[in-house]
Length: 231
Image 1: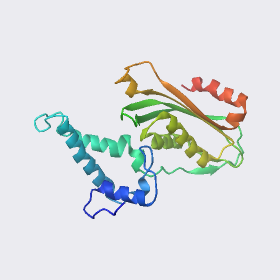
Image 2: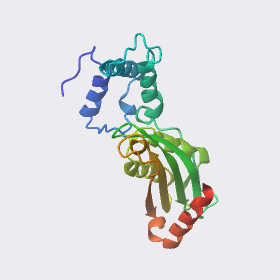
Image 3: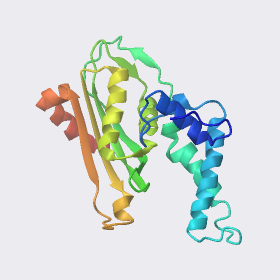
Image 4: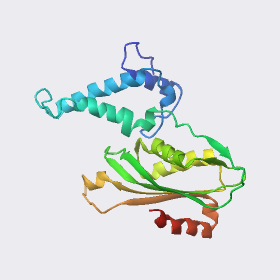
């Protein structure tokens, strides 16, 4: 891949760095390390221009339609700064504390609200996540709000649910280093509610069980039994 010209679109310059580094940049990957200061504003402007072209291709008269005159600007801001922000922002700062009290009992966090988007149709995914932690004396403890921040960071990207829970589990396991980790996600997918089969009742639930939650059936049952009481 040839280096882009200095006046090339910012998306091409960012993509060139990613490709040169051999770094994957799928829809649900974080690429913050390859974005230089000021480029996120430029990327938002580029998306706005391209979104304006999409509206024109949809034969929407944005010049005289007062409802859509600012739509391209709003959508670009929404994608870059809000619903896909987990792609472009660095990981949230998470303070970790040593397990001084040597806690080794089941901890459950949830339900944590999930707001994401289907990477197939960019339709909303709305749901909840529960996290189960079985710490050991060497585990790092993080604050309750940090589970929410990390969940938002992982989910605020185009995702498919099956991959999203694995990504969240990987992030938590790396930071906390517990004996056991469980993540359960239940979500409504508007790519099914709003289009396609238009089924309003169907939801998806999936889980990741690691360590003690995978090998200890009693611990797994305890976690799953306590989940409804947290909803």
